[in-house]
Each structure stands twice: as C-alpha cells, then as structure tokens.
Image 1 (cartoon, rainbow, N blue to C red):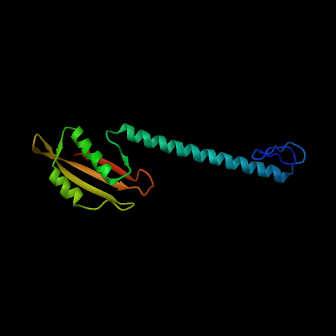
Image 2 (tube, one colour):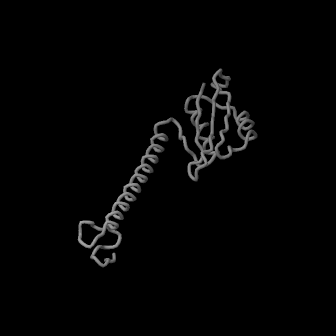
Length: 147
C-alpha cells in the first residue's frame, strides 16, 4: 500500500478530523462511506438470494432449478415415481419428446401426463410446468404436481 502526502495509505478512507482536510475531502469521505455501505447491501442481498434458492431446493420434494430442460423433465419423472406412480413411456415420448420444443426465454411449457398404478390408469393427472427464467445459471424452473 502506498502512502499519500499526508500519511494515509491508499485505499483507506481519509480522516476529516485531521488538519489539512477541506470540506471537499469531508464530502468525499461521505461518498466513499455511502458507496461502501451500498456495496455491502448489494452483497448481503446476493447472499440472501442464494440462501433462498438453496432453501427452496432443499425444502421441496424435487429440485426446482435446473441448468437444462432435460434435467428438469427427469426430476419431474423421478418425483412421480417417488410418489408411487408409473408414467407411460410412450405418452412421455409423444408429449415431451415429440411435443413442444424447450421453452424460449420467459416462456413456460405445460404438460399433463396420465398416471398409472399397477398398470391401471388413474383419474389423477401428473402436471409438469417448466419455465425458462432467462438466467445464465439454473435457467429452468420446474413446477410439478399430481391432481
């Protein structure tokens, strides 16, 4: 660290109580403190958002945020099987594989699949929604439920 003419190290906030400082220097100190606080606030918000993301993923029965559309669909399939249901592979191939392409940024794909239990179709349906969040990581948001 270098020292300035008054003896402060570069990067530290100058002490306005020292003699030789003008009102302008005092104002600069306030600006630096404001920028420092604003930067701390931005970092705190970022940490809270990451914590919320982790909590959202850990509290649900399936992972919500995914990097790829395929991993979101696989997580939905895993959730349905964990609930004791089976999915018809042919219907999945038709509705997911041959159906709509992966969602464009800001769009949602909605898919409803028939649930099977012991080889018999159930009255309930398995609903899957995959939303493209337009972000660089964890791009796809999965919402699935049985109703």
